[in-house]
Length: 242
Ligand code: FPP
Image 1 (cartoon, protein in one colour):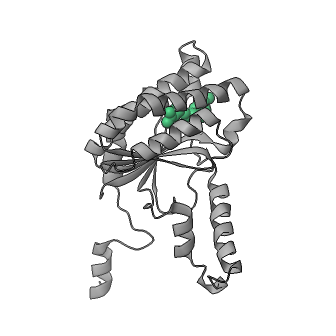
Image 2 (cartoon, helix red, strand yellow):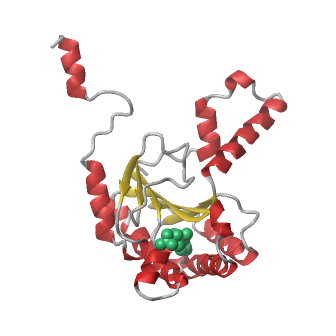
């Protein structure tokens, strides 16, 4: 898989619903439709890893009814999309904590992970009960235990090792998209986003379509990524002392 890694903060479901005079949960229902469409469109647009922020560790603060609906939708998605995801070569995995996910949703998710494990066209990563800070803390604990076990010296706790422990080897996101106008990261992929390009769309997630993804990707492709370096032309200028 050599395509791009795109991460999306799917925001604006509630505002979309309110703007239509509907209850908030209807926004989440439409949000799942957007997930279906974007998953379908992503491989054709050159995306090989798609990481979606489906439920943050802070989302537990929402009313119980809303939380219940979100996990019900997740379970329904895992069951109803199974065949389509398999036939499209999509591999689904989840990132985040698993111990607080309601059992029916957790079982459906684990089953989907198993059944899509051989997909090679797109790696769909669902961030569920996710907190980037908690992930870095977890990875640090894991390495700390290896130090205590004598497998690793403290000096060997390098940036690369921590990156491996945080990401499991998945490449860093090339592009982060956040919908619905807010410009913050909300504890999403903080370690991984160091050099990721950011794109903020005004569109609410339920209205986000293939064309919106294509527009974001075109914007990304027109950018020059320097990773802290300088562009080649400037490098040549330095070389000839111009
Ligand atoms: C943000 O909108 C969205 C969420 C907190 C949940 C995102 C979940 C889905 C799109 C559906 C579940 C996903 C899968 C993969 C089945 P918000 O409610 O914060 O919107 P607001 O800021 O307008 O209130």
